[in-house]
Structures are given as C-alpha cells and as structure tokens.
Image 1 (cartoon, helix red, strand yellow):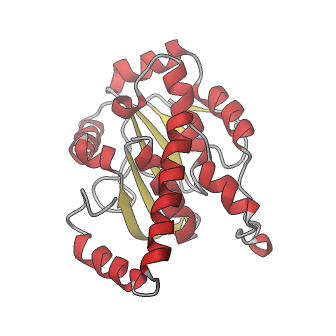
Image 2 (cartoon, one colour):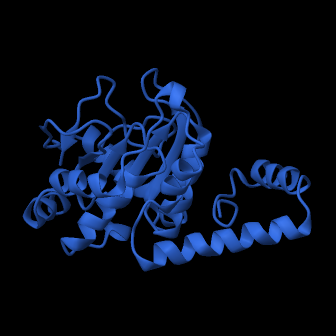
Length: 238
C-alpha cells in the first residue's frame, strides 16, 4: 500500500517486504491475501476498528506496558464531543480551508476513524477536509492505523515515535495524503501562519487518548509535512 504512492521509502520497504515473504510459503501468503480481503470488506460495511478489536481478541497487546485500546463505541462518543457541531466545523473550514487532527497515542486508529465518521455524519467530506498526524511508540500499532486510514482514504501521516520525548523515527503517508497534495497544503498553511495568520484555539477538557482537532495550521513535528503535537499534551478544539 505504501509503495503504490510513497517513492521516497519504496526501496527500503520493498526490501523489507521481500524479506518477510521469504519466511512463508505460497499457501500462507494466499491466506494473508484472504485476511486482507476480509479487512477491506469489514471497513466497506462501516467505519470501525476491525484491526484493533482483532488485536485485543488475540491478546497481542502488551498488558505489562498498559497497552489497551479504547472500545470503538466510546471512541464514537468522544469523537462527536470533540468534533462539535456542523457549524463549528464550517467555521474552521472557512477560516483555514481544512481541519487538522493530532493523535499522540494512536493505537490502531480507532479515535481517528471515529472522528472521520463524525465529520462525515455532519455533512463534510473528511477525505478532502481533514488531515491527521498520528503517533505511536509501537510499530505494530502504527501499521494497523496506517492500514485502516488508507482503506478509509483518510489523509494522514502516521509516525513511529514517542510523543512524550518528541523523538520520531519513521513516517507513513497514506494514499489520500499523497494524492490530495497534502504536503503542499500543510506547507502553505505553515507559511500563512508565519505571515501572521492567527489560529483560533480553544483548550477543552477531553478524555485521555482523544485526538486533537484544529482548524488552523501548525508547525511541523518531523520533516516539513506534519503539524506539531503539543509538548505539554494540551488538547485543542478548532
């Protein structure tokens, strides 16, 4: 999925793919394809955290390190609270052209999937009007989030790294990010901010692990494309 659009990382990821496939026979590789087809059909049916639910059902999460993913119905409730009304979203879009969401501990991406669902329910096309920057310290979580965001065509940069120490080491750009020209859009937003465009930000007490949603531009965290994640953990609504 990455190599279809991300030429910068193509060679490294292609080599990694070949290295992995050598461990399995053709029958197992065929099973992987069938599993992927089931994931596609599950997300075609409705937005949901199908990979996160499976991850927990198989008890693959790291309980010792406190790795527990928020159930999707709770994410839906939190996302609707954070997203606000259709009028709130319209104001943010009118001011900056799009919304930004920042998730410092993305897990399998349930909060962002629920946020995209809430934006769609309000009558807006998240595929054109939302950009996500998401981070997780566990590469498995990043890969799950990347797959689900890609299949739902959410413009996003998903990063392997530690939001607490602000150390990042690998970026995954979804197809929607690349096809939508979001690198240029975010650079332009950053330039507008540097030219004196004021961002309106309202601190709100939202539940832990909620994404940060903002209507305006922010500075990059890792490279020129990604918006900043607050160092102090402050959450912002538009």
